[in-house]
Amino acid sequence: MSVKEYLTERIRQGTIHLALLDPDKQDSAEAGIIARKVKEAGTDAIMIGGSTGVNSANLGATARAIKEMSGLPTIHFPGGPAELSGEVDSMFFMSMANSRDPFWIIGAQATASLYVKKLKIETISLGYIIVEPGMKVGEVGKAEPIKHGQNDKAAGYALACELLGMDFIYLEAGSGADAPVPPDMISAVKKAITVPLIIGGGIKTPAAAAAARLAGADAIVTGTFIESCADNNMLKAVVDASKGS
Image (cartoon, rainbow, N blue to C red; front, side, top):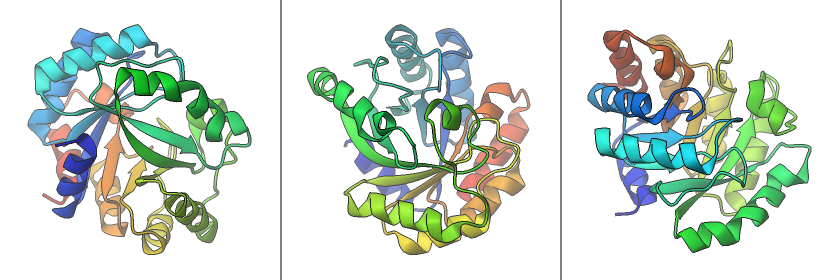
């Protein structure tokens, strides 16, 4: 079964949880330990990536450690075309739809595509839409973040991505954001599209995770929270709230 098929099947059963680990924030051994913890908490798969500091070496080492310690599917969440590794199970082949720079819409993808094919990495196409505050990813990607309340604008971007053939849509508030994507925006986007909707950025509590799920999220991503959370009970509470379990 491909990772895309695995994710799709899980989503048919309800909202899933995806953990996000940044190879620039911990070494591979620590990433493996965190991966084991989030598997025990009930996460469905692990994304690997970050806006800066990721390279092919630490990406590959992190992917190996995660698979060894958890056995969960790994999904590369790329920050640029220079960080590729055949060690991952799959990658989100993504376009930052609301970037002001064509490089992040299609240029980076064109730069990487031949290498991705050579490495035989499973690709999952992803429409990536930055919502305020956007944080570091919005800065690096030269995004024009969608403001809270601009629900039709968010829905328009999302539907455009679907009509262009993308498999998933991701609304991203940014790693460490002080506020997640608003539930009313999630609902508006969910009503406009038929492909799965991923929500990430600023989700640090069970209440925030539950709000995103109830608004229509098909997958909820937590990264900064997971990397810094030392309380296994709170970790499980956020994962459970994401999945409604």
